[in-house]
Image (cartoon, rainbow, N blue to C red; front, side, top):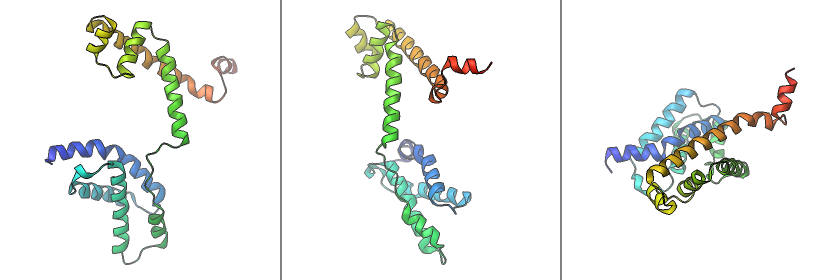
Length: 192
């Protein structure tokens, strides 16, 4: 694997998980200084650079495993290791990629918001949007299916994307008040 391909692989499969890995370490290895955390992440990247990346099926899990192994190696090399550090390392579990109940509910709510926004679109824009986003059709395929020009499909998709984005933004702006059980009318009335 050449360097450019290796860079792309790391950027796609490892880099997106660095923030999560840092948070994971901060939550579980309480006595780790910020500089030590940076050194640990840097060493994990160095280790990743020297392995055959094509054999890695799950970059996220591999990255977390490398970090955990580095912590274990550091503890073995140290002459004096606080007992707390050993128990912290032993307690480290690689976070599961399986969505928990909270993530599932959140994803379903997001899907419902998207569906409501799509239902508000003009019929042609809605149909083009569904064909592209939900069925994976290209603009050319949509044009054939709808018996319209590709330029018209492009306009329908632009309209749909703009309106869906706006609807989701508006719903998110209204969300904090509705989560508190205060509607728009109630919050405006309470300002008096």
